[in-house]
Length: 487
Image (tube, rainbow, N blue to C red):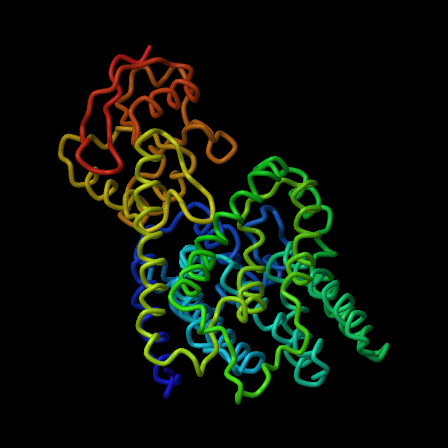
């Protein structure tokens, strides 16, 4: 099989950016634009560290982004601004490969890297101008370090775990949950295996796990306010459902398919060396992950994506359950690789179709597999179209849903349009109406929406006016309608 796994890894690291490019060329979306303009563009790094006016400030990533913007002349071109995230994603693949090779040398680590690289969940988030990619990189390092410590390889394990665990909460405060899970796992496994770890090492492990939260002491009140203020996004059952589906898509189908390709791939030959699993327990690890996740979800009802730091660690710990033994693969390598490719491509096509169907019915999907913004250039394209339409007067006001408003504002600013004529529907705290409601009876207006009925209801809810809609552009994904007879 893997007579030369280094060549396969090199091929993956070359092909992965090409695949990610399909995502990176899409429009910058709501959260990315808030990260860029509200935080990374601050006049000083102190404002980044000591400001937590919204959970979008993934502080450590924001500082990295700020340095990158300074080096690139504050370019907001999609490929330029997302390049650091792509590099971080490549780093995650490298750490995953090295970690799996070190922990499970009998398993083809290159296949695990391919699984992660082509995972629809990983691909949906690793490129974003957000802290998710950095969280996944650090979580991979922390998990590998934790597993090495559990095997008694303290020095190597601590060198990986300690810096990664310290930095994880500095990206997102919810990442401290992964550190808690790793510590729970260590305690249970070491006690089960009868392994004794010196007290000073336990002190170092525990201190590293919580040290990163010290960054939030100056903004603790704001952090607590936003944690409570964001409560109610998803019910615990919805979060669990999202992650169960994501797990099936990420690796579940692949694991079943691998076993179907050949059960003998997992049977050690009589003359092979015993596998060095060192009493790792995926079940204990998964339970250690579920405990803090369920508590946090029950209290705060967060977005499912706040737990993305668990994605790669769980993938690594279950590697022996998914990957066949290296010496058994041989000629089955193309078939196994094809399984991973078909799983990724199939789910990407399916999620794209589902997203399209939901958008055109007036819904904005936002889960681990379907995002209303992913792989889309709808806003930038319609801004260009409206700006080049001679029938659109300079006084015309544009209405758009609050989820798309930051993108409309961004791409209108790039094209040097009058930003005062942009109006936000359904999100007055984001951008309140710029005129008294009665004034909209007499001005030219255009509603930009995926669904006419949804756009009309949103307009009425925002302005208090009923109206008729006359189609302007209804041949694309994102459509434009003239407002007629506002009353």
